[in-house]
Length: 269
Image (cartoon, rainbow, N blue to C red):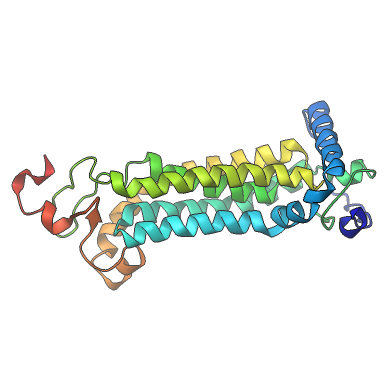
């Protein structure tokens, strides 16, 4: 069973201007936790097939699916602001992937299977650097994007583009439920993906923690642009491009349409 997934050691990575680093700080913790999980991997051969798939493609695909479902819910419920915030989160995740490539070439940490050639590796051995983990970047970015649409109150309050009235606070509680559920699912999927990357032998714990936190920070920083994004949305929404962010028809928040919210001057109170 082990031979199915273990491949020959990759040739050493080419050295740059600075010497490659075997293990980044905290060296002792990174090494001990990695070796402990690697030992656990050897003892759980029955899970190798699933962990191999999850660490390579299944984990990212499930996270992306949760992200797409959240966007679809926002689109279907005619809630364009959560959709725009998710777009910002997706852009932040992509930006994070590019940024971490610069960090990787600056840190120059060798893959753990290079430093520990006796380690069990369940996937093909990559020729790039170990710090930070690209997969954890995806996990952190997409999960944080989903958490932002839960915490930013974009479901509860929205300015009516056609009538200039505000839907009452709390009217979007029915809409935020699916977003909370998807965010909770994404947290579990993302953290398990981070663990899986260590389990299959290709990353230290510090690699996945750094990647997760880096992308989360980038997404949060990019989300600060949401007031500008909402202004652009107000301009785009009445046009044909508005259908990209909400299902055609009057905006609905918790069963209240814009037209209904604008029938009375007291609707905003």
